[in-house]
Length: 166
Ligand code: RP5
Image (tube, rainbow, N blue to C red; front, side, top):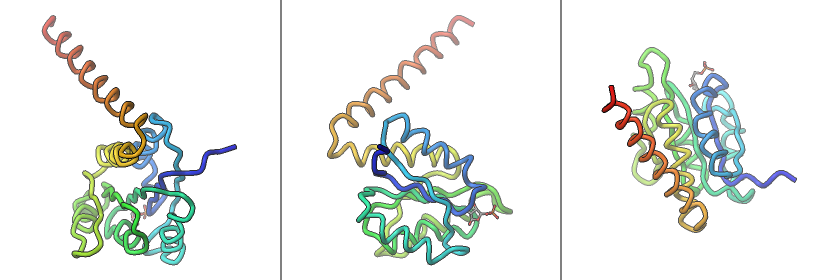
């Protein structure tokens, strides 16, 4: 049987998928069950609000929302749930993600969205941030995060050692 999703990954368009897959790759690496949905704050507002307001009762603990351009997705989702919402501004459009960054990060006081960097780095960090939140109450995830960081450290050390031989 498929495990119930703990993280809901939402994106405004299927064109966001290549970026948002960075987040799902991280969740798979840490064995955190997730659900991925395409739903737009502008094009499918009712479905978006329903997904957000029903998430907690389905056992979801964190929502990651990626959107580009006017990028209201994370804010709208955050307005319909008290689960932590992590926003990822998508690159592209005439302003290449700066528009989405401002729209996502500039939430009015009262409804927070934890905003990551534009694009793939932001999506990857959104996945890691979600795992870190879950790790607060799941020690095995805390151990996995520490191992992940130790591996990153080792990898850089190896790259540095290689550089010294050139
Ligand atoms: C946003 O508009 C989506 O999140 C996407 O990043 C952007 C453009 O969407 P498409 O026109 O590519 O579907 O809602």
